[in-house]
Every structure is written in structure tokens, then in C-alpha cells.
Image (cartoon, rainbow, N blue to C red; front, side, top):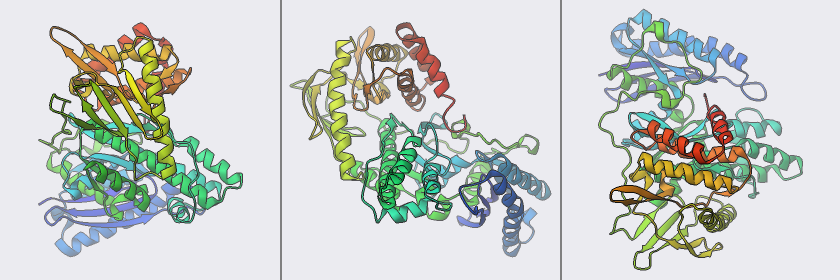
Length: 541
């Protein structure tokens, strides 16, 4: 059976591990960098890595020698974190891995650090095709497996969740890492309102950190700000995870990343999954924080699939995105299960609501259900606001020529809507270039009228298929929509749609081209120009 030595060195933690596939044993040796003050200093982190990597690798080799004798006979491959991360740290770990692989005369495996966070959860849980939430210092994104790769379904558009928390803790003078300190103080505080920024399955943390700093400076007790910061940011991560489950049809969620050690985040995700009948798995803490164990485990899978790398072509990649990795080690795994709203369906569940269908009346009764994972004040505010927005903007879109359901009744306080039942399938389940073109035209008309949809994914587009002609395409669920005259907001609508298409469609490139062509024919060229700019802002673009 395969035995792999893994080396991790993306940022702050120098780590080596030995994974033995025969008995699933993972032994990890780590030495973490601890700054004297503030956050991680790249130069100091690299200096720490330079001294610590040889030491942890030596400990791993000593373990192999004590159990199995000659490492060149006992080790099948050396795996290392090729990226993403801090360039100086990555280069030190990469150099050590190349030297070790060369001296042992074994293959070298270059592992994507973020995919390793996902795969260690999938490996340990036994899940088949989970959605993964990565919540770490420099990262926050939601991944789903589709068409041979892990697709980024949603991500932070500015800073990672751990960095957002650390930005606040540095402001109040606390040492790194700040997350555990916020978690402790939040238990003593009362919830306060902070900005809640979700756009489809993308999100933003920078404004929340600034608002938290302002609240403390304005005299709000730090315990209350910690509670508000934690409840707000973690609710955002939980919401986008649920949206990803709904979009893909998956029923499994894996958590990865160091921020995943926070008990409140794990509780929220577990509560959300339980409410929708999905399974949730969070690895043990040693596999959540940066560690070489996950590098060794994924390295073993890649080695067994023949996915090794020549030493000469093994340069590190500080901007190595997870969706750039061909998933060579998986075969036969399904994408999420999906089903049309067929003639027998009487109830469907989305990310936010349960919809009861009355075909005799031609109505859909939508209930934005209370989310037990959210703080009650936050939950009530979001349900009211989104129900009101959906009713108003659905009708406004209809008035400017966009096919939408007729709104029959609305009760914002209870989160209830009665709307016309439209279409016979979600666009997700009946995607075609002609239908995608209609979506581009519809969004252009909404933007020209001064409002955004907010969540234009293929689950929020309904299609009525016609024999021998183009389908009639409806936009639904404007709950995240709002009025705006900013090109940036219009471009984010397009970004959300294209990201969702890329994660679900069989031929996403053709669909995206058709979508943009149609938008350009009706809308403002400046929006597409801004879209190109937005595409450079995701992590490691």
C-alpha cells in the first residue's frame, strides 16, 4: 500500500507528515510561526520556515526509519503544497520537497493547498460529491465538483474570513491569531447589527471589519462587537453554503480551513444541513488548520492516479486557484442529484424558502423559513427585507418587459409570497444557449431600469419549453435585489450568473459567450468592461 511523506509550507505553519494508506495512519509534525505582534509578516514567516522545515522533515524521516527502516524503500512519493500561499514560504517548502524526492529517488507530487482542505474532509467522511466551504485566514470560498474539476461556486471578493477577523483584533490590540479570542469574547456579548453582504454566492468582508472597528471606537463593548462580527460573517458563510447545496443538488457539505475550528461556525453549518436533510462533516482540528497530513493524503491519491510532476517543472504557484486543478484521482463520482419540477411535484425546497405548488390555481406559495442557525434579530430582518424586495422587484421587472411571475399576495413580516407558478423546469435542468441569451437580455432590461436581480443563478430562472421553438424564460426570486445606478452592481449580477453556469453547465464557455453577446446587444458595454475587472478580484486571480 502507498506511503507518502507530505510537506506543508504555504504561510505560517511548517509541517511534515507521513500517510500510510494501508492502515489510514497519518502522523503530523508541525512548528507554527507566532508573530510577536500584529498579523503574519511574510519575511518573518519565511525565516521561520527556513529553520523549521528541515526540522519537521527530519522528525518525519526518523519516524519512517524507526518503523520501516530505509526511507528510500519505505516511502513511495513526496508531496508538497505547491500553492496558493506566500511565495517565499512556498519556495522553501518546495525546495525541501525536491531535495528529498531526489535523494530518495521517488516521484514528486505538487498539491493544491485548498483542494487538500476539501479532500481531507471527503476522505475522512466517506462522502461522494460534497460541496466544500473553505474558511481560512486568506481564503473563503465554496467549491463544488463538476465536470472533472472543483469549481468555485462563490468566494470572497476582497479578504479571507480569518484575515477579516484578524483585521479587527489587530485594531483592538490583540495578538495573532485573533479568531480564538473573538470566539471567547463573543460568548460574553450581545448581538449588534453589522453589514451583511451576500451577492448570489459571493460575499464581502472588508466593510464588516471596518464597521466593527468603528463600533468599538464609538464605545460599543468589545464583547458585543465580537458577537456581532461572528454572527454576521458566519451566517454569510452558512447562507452561501446552503445556496451552493441548492444550486448543485448536493446533499453533503464538508468544512475546511483553520477558521473551521470555531465551534459557532460548525454549529451553524450543522444546523443548516440538518434542517435541509443534508450531511455535514468537519474534520478534527489537526486537519482544519494548515497541516501536512492533508497534503500527504491527497498526495497519495494523486500518486496512485499517476499525477506526479517532474522536478524541473515543479515551480511553486502562489496564485494556484483550486479550479485550475484537473481532478485526476476521482472516477465515477456523481455531480449533485437534480430533478425538474414535474407534474407530480407539490413542494420544492430552495436555499431560503419552501414553495408549495397549487397547479389548479396556477399559484406557488413561497415561505421564507426562519433559519435556526442565524441570530433571531438578523434572521427576522433578512426575511422581511428579502420578501419585500422580491415582491416589489418582481413586479417592476414585469413592467419593463421581463417575464416574471405575477405577484398575488405578500406578507413581509411572515416571509410569505403567493406568486404565479411559471415554467416547467429550472434553467439549471434545461440549460441551452437560446435560454441563456434570454437571461442576458432580461438582466440588461432590469439594469436599464435601475435595479439588480442580486442572485441570478440557473435555479432562479424558470423555463417553459415549447415544441419547435425557443423556450419562454422567466426570472424569479428577486429577494437579494435592490435599486442601484452603479455599473459595479450590474456587473456583479453578470458575475454571479456566469459563476453558477460554470459550476453546473455541460458546456459553460458556449453558454457564457451567448449570455454576454445577448447582454451586449441590449445593455451597456460599460457593464461588461467592469465584469472583466471583477474577474480579477477573486482570490489568486
